[in-house]
Image (cartoon, rainbow, N blue to C red; front, side):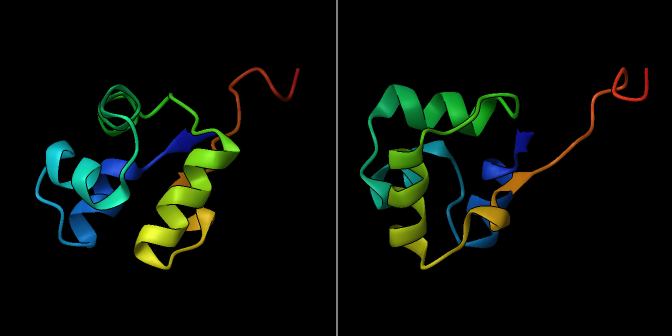
Length: 72
C-alpha cells in the first residue's frame, strides 16, 4: 500500500506540504512525512482528518501495490 497524498493534495489545490498541513490541521511532522514519503501509511485518525478536510474517501489518496514476492 502506498499513499498518493502529494498528488491528491495538488489535485485539491494545495501547492505544497505547507498548504496541505494548514488545510488538514494534522501535525506538521505527520503532514510532511506523508507528503514526502509514499511508503508512509496514514493512521486511521489521519485518514479521517484528510477525508473530513477534503470531503474525500481513503481510496482517493491510498493505492494498493502488490509486493513483488507475493506470487512466491
